[in-house]
Length: 161
Image 1 (cartoon, helix red, strand yellow):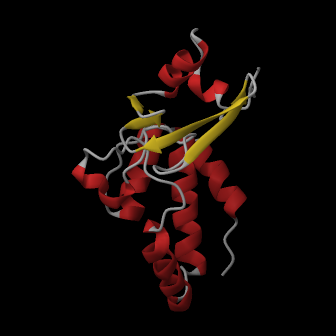
Image 2 (cartoon, one colour; image 1 turned 180 degrees about the vertical axis):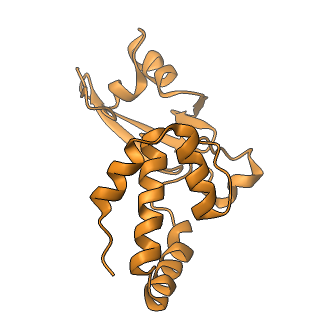
């Protein structure tokens, strides 16, 4: 049996938010905290279509679960993790996504010499010294204030020499 999704959505658009919430409760068996008309219309329309035409097949549902099980594999570290946070475990990284992983060496040519800074979980190492930020390293190198990520070319703005 085909469902006329457009006609159903048109009827839903004429309903008040209170009526939409009541219809949501009828279809899902649970209340919603949402008062967003568009969201409620979309959810109710999806549910009506799902009930009329059938839900996912068992095979598709199993495949979706397999994909969801692998979803915890991360290509990038969690934001805000540092080596002092136990819940981050082996994924300890600098707080910013634009920074390389700990152990990486950031290099830059500046006034005829090669600058090498090692990224650590809790900051940066340059010429045996420890710095909390790349900006502090850039200040040490140039003697003036710099945005560290800009100085080392880690942002779209590039670098100036």
